[in-house]
Image (cartoon, rainbow, N blue to C red; front, side, top):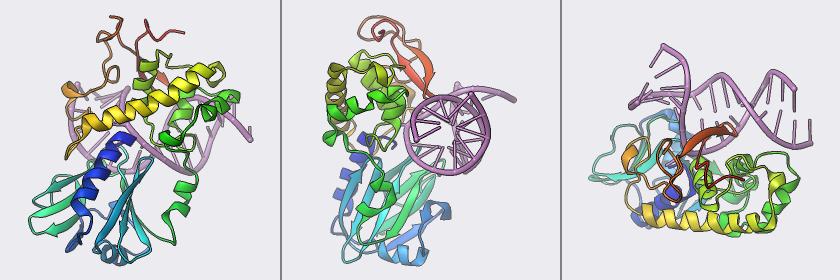
Length: 266
DNA sequence: TAGTCTGTTAGACA
DNA sequence: CTGTCTAACAGACT
């Protein structure tokens, strides 16, 4: 569940399913998915009751009662967590059994994501989070204007999690379309109005998507291309819903950028 | 078949 | 030092 909105929906689900409850068993179906200094210790720790589940950027942090260790979950490209009656769904990598017929399952077709078990006084001091930029809610137009001195494209900066946390390739496409901004806009071309609009639209976009995707499981574009909620992403050749231009695709910052050449000009 | 993918990182290069 | 590109991770789909 690659971007901020999908991870936030997963956070709300996990917190509702898991808080105050202890897994009776933890099953690691694919050893690559658990990265811990000591697997047995991690599995034992993950059987404690859950205190809460926090999201930071595209990470979930599961906090357990009475222990100074944390499970960091990252979905990368194809990961997701479901609640199921068994622990052996297709692509299941790690499963937590709350009851014999109630399992939380980390599924990941490509197995690029996983669960990191870290043992430290505070998860916030982990290098991953020390290097992470602000959440969109804490991000300010001045932060965007500070990018102006860079020679990079704005897209490259927005995909950089040390600049702002949680934005991915789809969000960039959708937000640029909403702002009527060209996909290859450079940081040097930024102005104060664009910076302010970018911050507000990023927050609005994620809030809208969280509300839209709320539910026990999120379907990714590649799983069902016909039913996704995006205006330009994966819509090459379709008409722009705003101006009847035709959605095009180019590569920017090494990733596909979908955009409307008519209403997203300079 | 070769290209593609809502992510991230390392290394080569300009 | 900055930025861009590619490969790698791995599997399925077109």
